Image (cartoon, rainbow, N blue to C red):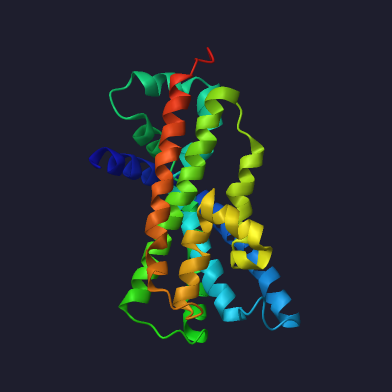
Length: 258
Protein backbone atom coordinates (compact mmCIF):
# COMPACT_ATOMS: atom_id res chain seq x y z
CA UNK A 1 0.00 0.00 0.00
CA UNK A 2 2.89 2.36 0.77
CA UNK A 3 4.29 1.86 -2.71
CA UNK A 4 0.93 2.61 -4.34
CA UNK A 5 0.53 5.75 -2.24
CA UNK A 6 3.97 6.77 -3.47
CA UNK A 7 2.80 6.28 -7.06
CA UNK A 8 -0.31 8.33 -6.21
CA UNK A 9 1.79 11.17 -4.82
CA UNK A 10 4.10 11.21 -7.85
CA UNK A 11 1.21 11.39 -10.33
CA UNK A 12 -0.54 14.09 -8.31
CA UNK A 13 2.59 16.24 -8.22
CA UNK A 14 3.06 15.66 -11.95
CA UNK A 15 -0.41 16.86 -12.99
CA UNK A 16 -0.17 19.86 -10.67
CA UNK A 17 2.89 21.06 -12.60
CA UNK A 18 0.53 21.98 -15.46
CA UNK A 19 -2.56 23.21 -13.63
CA UNK A 20 -4.22 24.87 -16.62
CA UNK A 21 -3.84 21.72 -18.73
CA UNK A 22 -5.29 19.68 -15.87
CA UNK A 23 -8.23 22.07 -15.49
CA UNK A 24 -9.07 22.12 -19.21
CA UNK A 25 -8.85 18.33 -19.47
CA UNK A 26 -11.08 17.96 -16.42
CA UNK A 27 -13.64 20.34 -17.96
CA UNK A 28 -13.54 18.25 -21.14
CA UNK A 29 -14.25 15.09 -19.14
CA UNK A 30 -17.15 16.84 -17.42
CA UNK A 31 -18.65 17.92 -20.75
CA UNK A 32 -18.40 14.42 -22.23
CA UNK A 33 -20.63 12.92 -19.53
CA UNK A 34 -22.79 16.07 -19.44
CA UNK A 35 -23.67 15.41 -23.07
CA UNK A 36 -25.05 12.01 -22.07
CA UNK A 37 -27.02 13.64 -19.25
CA UNK A 38 -28.60 16.05 -21.74
CA UNK A 39 -29.79 13.06 -23.79
CA UNK A 40 -31.58 11.72 -20.71
CA UNK A 41 -33.00 15.13 -19.86
CA UNK A 42 -34.44 15.79 -23.32
CA UNK A 43 -35.92 12.29 -23.53
CA UNK A 44 -37.80 12.81 -20.28
CA UNK A 45 -39.16 16.08 -21.62
CA UNK A 46 -41.10 13.86 -24.03
CA UNK A 47 -41.69 10.75 -21.89
CA UNK A 48 -42.47 10.72 -18.19
CA UNK A 49 -41.09 7.27 -17.42
CA UNK A 50 -39.07 4.43 -18.94
CA UNK A 51 -40.20 0.90 -18.06
CA UNK A 52 -41.67 2.21 -14.82
CA UNK A 53 -38.64 4.26 -13.81
CA UNK A 54 -39.06 8.01 -13.29
CA UNK A 55 -36.57 10.74 -14.23
CA UNK A 56 -35.14 11.03 -10.72
CA UNK A 57 -34.79 7.24 -10.45
CA UNK A 58 -32.95 7.12 -13.77
CA UNK A 59 -30.59 9.85 -12.56
CA UNK A 60 -29.94 7.86 -9.40
CA UNK A 61 -29.08 4.83 -11.54
CA UNK A 62 -26.96 6.82 -14.00
CA UNK A 63 -25.03 8.64 -11.29
CA UNK A 64 -24.02 5.43 -9.51
CA UNK A 65 -22.78 3.83 -12.74
CA UNK A 66 -20.88 7.01 -13.61
CA UNK A 67 -19.21 7.05 -10.18
CA UNK A 68 -18.21 3.40 -10.58
CA UNK A 69 -16.78 3.90 -14.05
CA UNK A 70 -14.97 7.12 -13.12
CA UNK A 71 -13.26 5.47 -10.14
CA UNK A 72 -12.25 2.44 -12.22
CA UNK A 73 -10.92 4.62 -15.04
CA UNK A 74 -9.08 6.88 -12.60
CA UNK A 75 -7.25 4.14 -10.71
CA UNK A 76 -7.27 1.38 -13.34
CA UNK A 77 -6.20 3.52 -16.30
CA UNK A 78 -2.88 1.66 -16.52
CA UNK A 79 -4.74 -1.42 -17.74
CA UNK A 80 -6.88 0.58 -20.17
CA UNK A 81 -3.75 1.94 -21.88
CA UNK A 82 -1.78 -1.29 -21.50
CA UNK A 83 -1.31 -1.82 -25.24
CA UNK A 84 1.20 1.06 -25.32
CA UNK A 85 3.06 -0.50 -22.38
CA UNK A 86 3.42 -3.70 -24.41
CA UNK A 87 4.31 -2.10 -27.74
CA UNK A 88 7.02 0.21 -26.38
CA UNK A 89 8.70 -2.56 -24.37
CA UNK A 90 7.93 -0.99 -20.99
CA UNK A 91 6.49 -4.26 -19.70
CA UNK A 92 9.97 -5.80 -19.96
CA UNK A 93 11.07 -3.41 -17.21
CA UNK A 94 8.01 -4.27 -15.14
CA UNK A 95 8.82 -7.99 -15.37
CA UNK A 96 12.35 -7.61 -13.97
CA UNK A 97 11.31 -5.47 -11.00
CA UNK A 98 10.71 -7.20 -7.65
CA UNK A 99 7.21 -5.75 -7.19
CA UNK A 100 3.94 -7.34 -8.33
CA UNK A 101 3.08 -6.63 -11.99
CA UNK A 102 -0.51 -5.62 -11.23
CA UNK A 103 0.62 -3.09 -8.62
CA UNK A 104 3.08 -1.58 -11.09
CA UNK A 105 0.50 -1.35 -13.88
CA UNK A 106 -2.04 0.22 -11.49
CA UNK A 107 0.54 2.76 -10.40
CA UNK A 108 1.78 3.50 -13.92
CA UNK A 109 -1.15 5.82 -14.73
CA UNK A 110 -3.68 7.57 -12.50
CA UNK A 111 -6.17 9.86 -14.24
CA UNK A 112 -7.14 12.55 -11.76
CA UNK A 113 -9.15 14.38 -14.42
CA UNK A 114 -11.82 11.65 -14.14
CA UNK A 115 -12.87 13.20 -10.84
CA UNK A 116 -14.62 15.86 -12.93
CA UNK A 117 -17.09 13.20 -14.04
CA UNK A 118 -17.60 12.25 -10.42
CA UNK A 119 -18.56 15.81 -9.55
CA UNK A 120 -21.36 15.65 -12.11
CA UNK A 121 -22.33 12.16 -10.90
CA UNK A 122 -22.53 13.38 -7.29
CA UNK A 123 -24.76 16.31 -8.32
CA UNK A 124 -27.10 13.93 -10.18
CA UNK A 125 -27.01 11.52 -7.24
CA UNK A 126 -28.06 14.23 -4.78
CA UNK A 127 -30.88 15.31 -7.10
CA UNK A 128 -32.01 11.71 -7.52
CA UNK A 129 -32.04 11.13 -3.75
CA UNK A 130 -34.06 14.27 -3.08
CA UNK A 131 -36.69 13.55 -5.73
CA UNK A 132 -37.08 9.76 -5.89
CA UNK A 133 -39.03 9.43 -2.63
CA UNK A 134 -36.74 6.69 -1.35
CA UNK A 135 -37.23 5.79 2.30
CA UNK A 136 -33.60 5.65 3.41
CA UNK A 137 -32.21 3.43 6.14
CA UNK A 138 -28.76 2.10 6.96
CA UNK A 139 -29.30 -0.97 4.75
CA UNK A 140 -29.96 1.15 1.67
CA UNK A 141 -26.96 3.34 2.44
CA UNK A 142 -24.86 0.18 2.65
CA UNK A 143 -26.36 -0.98 -0.65
CA UNK A 144 -25.16 2.22 -2.34
CA UNK A 145 -21.69 1.68 -0.89
CA UNK A 146 -21.67 -1.97 -2.03
CA UNK A 147 -22.79 -0.90 -5.53
CA UNK A 148 -19.93 1.59 -5.85
CA UNK A 149 -17.33 -0.90 -4.59
CA UNK A 150 -18.66 -3.80 -6.68
CA UNK A 151 -19.11 -1.67 -9.81
CA UNK A 152 -15.63 -0.17 -9.57
CA UNK A 153 -14.07 -3.62 -9.23
CA UNK A 154 -16.18 -5.00 -12.08
CA UNK A 155 -15.09 -2.25 -14.47
CA UNK A 156 -11.50 -2.71 -13.29
CA UNK A 157 -11.83 -6.44 -14.02
CA UNK A 158 -12.83 -5.66 -17.61
CA UNK A 159 -9.79 -3.39 -17.93
CA UNK A 160 -7.61 -6.28 -16.68
CA UNK A 161 -9.07 -8.61 -19.32
CA UNK A 162 -8.49 -5.93 -21.96
CA UNK A 163 -4.86 -5.68 -20.85
CA UNK A 164 -4.44 -9.48 -20.73
CA UNK A 165 -5.58 -9.80 -24.34
CA UNK A 166 -2.80 -7.40 -25.34
CA UNK A 167 -0.27 -10.13 -24.47
CA UNK A 168 -1.61 -12.05 -27.48
CA UNK A 169 -2.49 -9.20 -29.85
CA UNK A 170 0.01 -6.46 -28.82
CA UNK A 171 -2.55 -3.84 -29.82
CA UNK A 172 -5.73 -3.35 -27.81
CA UNK A 173 -8.99 -4.86 -29.10
CA UNK A 174 -11.44 -2.03 -29.63
CA UNK A 175 -14.50 -4.27 -29.28
CA UNK A 176 -13.74 -4.43 -25.54
CA UNK A 177 -14.91 -0.82 -25.32
CA UNK A 178 -18.44 -2.18 -25.63
CA UNK A 179 -17.99 -3.58 -22.11
CA UNK A 180 -16.52 -0.37 -20.67
CA UNK A 181 -17.50 2.87 -22.41
CA UNK A 182 -20.54 1.13 -23.85
CA UNK A 183 -21.82 0.09 -20.44
CA UNK A 184 -21.16 3.57 -19.11
CA UNK A 185 -23.43 4.92 -21.85
CA UNK A 186 -26.16 2.25 -21.69
CA UNK A 187 -25.89 1.92 -17.92
CA UNK A 188 -27.67 5.23 -17.53
CA UNK A 189 -30.88 3.19 -17.72
CA UNK A 190 -31.65 0.05 -15.70
CA UNK A 191 -30.63 -2.97 -17.78
CA UNK A 192 -34.21 -4.28 -17.81
CA UNK A 193 -35.11 -1.71 -20.49
CA UNK A 194 -32.87 -3.58 -22.97
CA UNK A 195 -34.62 -6.93 -22.68
CA UNK A 196 -34.22 -10.28 -20.94
CA UNK A 197 -31.19 -11.39 -22.96
CA UNK A 198 -29.20 -8.34 -21.90
CA UNK A 199 -30.19 -8.89 -18.26
CA UNK A 200 -29.09 -12.53 -18.54
CA UNK A 201 -25.73 -11.55 -20.08
CA UNK A 202 -25.16 -8.84 -17.47
CA UNK A 203 -25.98 -11.28 -14.67
CA UNK A 204 -24.09 -14.42 -15.68
CA UNK A 205 -21.27 -13.37 -18.06
CA UNK A 206 -20.27 -9.88 -16.89
CA UNK A 207 -22.04 -9.04 -13.60
CA UNK A 208 -23.08 -5.47 -14.35
CA UNK A 209 -26.68 -6.18 -13.35
CA UNK A 210 -25.47 -7.27 -9.91
CA UNK A 211 -24.03 -3.81 -9.28
CA UNK A 212 -26.76 -1.81 -11.01
CA UNK A 213 -30.18 -3.33 -11.72
CA UNK A 214 -30.95 -5.68 -8.81
CA UNK A 215 -29.70 -3.50 -5.93
CA UNK A 216 -31.42 -0.51 -7.56
CA UNK A 217 -34.74 -2.40 -7.37
CA UNK A 218 -34.16 -2.91 -3.65
CA UNK A 219 -33.28 0.76 -3.05
CA UNK A 220 -36.35 1.99 -4.95
CA UNK A 221 -38.62 -0.54 -3.17
CA UNK A 222 -39.54 -2.13 -6.49
CA UNK A 223 -38.47 -5.50 -5.10
CA UNK A 224 -38.43 -6.31 -1.39
CA UNK A 225 -35.76 -9.04 -1.57
CA UNK A 226 -33.23 -7.90 1.00
CA UNK A 227 -30.50 -10.18 -0.31
CA UNK A 228 -30.34 -7.99 -3.43
CA UNK A 229 -28.25 -5.55 -1.38
CA UNK A 230 -25.43 -8.12 -1.17
CA UNK A 231 -25.28 -8.90 -4.90
CA UNK A 232 -22.65 -6.16 -5.59
CA UNK A 233 -20.32 -7.97 -3.18
CA UNK A 234 -20.89 -11.17 -5.14
CA UNK A 235 -19.88 -9.28 -8.29
CA UNK A 236 -16.46 -8.69 -6.73
CA UNK A 237 -15.72 -12.37 -7.37
CA UNK A 238 -15.55 -11.43 -11.05
CA UNK A 239 -11.97 -10.36 -10.35
CA UNK A 240 -10.96 -14.01 -9.88
CA UNK A 241 -11.40 -15.08 -13.54
CA UNK A 242 -9.98 -11.70 -14.61
CA UNK A 243 -6.84 -12.39 -12.58
CA UNK A 244 -6.61 -15.90 -14.03
CA UNK A 245 -6.78 -14.53 -17.60
CA UNK A 246 -4.09 -11.99 -16.68
CA UNK A 247 -1.76 -14.74 -15.39
CA UNK A 248 -2.34 -16.79 -18.54
CA UNK A 249 -1.43 -13.73 -20.59
CA UNK A 250 1.80 -13.21 -18.67
CA UNK A 251 2.80 -16.83 -19.28
CA UNK A 252 2.41 -16.29 -23.03
CA UNK A 253 4.14 -12.90 -23.05
CA UNK A 254 6.98 -12.42 -25.52
CA UNK A 255 8.92 -9.19 -25.65
CA UNK A 256 8.17 -6.92 -28.60
CA UNK A 257 11.85 -6.08 -28.77
CA UNK A 258 11.21 -2.33 -28.66
